[in-house]
Length: 199
Image (cartoon, rainbow, N blue to C red):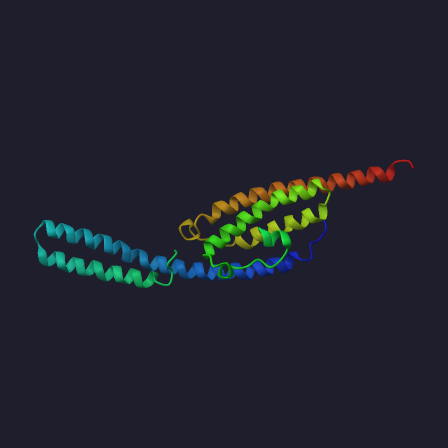
């Protein structure tokens, strides 16, 4: 297969953007880990306060309600900065980041992975047209996306199911790699046969 000189540049651009997303996810993950105990305390003390009301223990109910409210304020404070716990690829231009598109980082990553999967259709069309070099470039773009996103290793609760989307992309990528490899080998074989045919 021919080398794609733009591949490393594209990967560098995507890696920078993915690194920014990772930093954001890391902050959100820390906030989540800090907020979860506070949320559990809210539920536990609120339930205890209700039971105290049923026992007609108004003082205990009030004290537990105050504790529950304090825990709730803590969780809200921690989570306040984190309210929300294909054309570029085909054209070969710089992929816009989540801020440029005004979307959440997780939506951007999933959209990027899905766009890369959609490149398979374009790739197969190019193979049918005999444009193997173009198909190889599209395969390289798909590979760049997968390589950039596969390093994001956070719970699905934070990434909105990115892992499943990447699993689907990996399967599409491997099928596409097989299609390109088969076409390249067939093209080489056909060329060799034609060269050895008697004039």
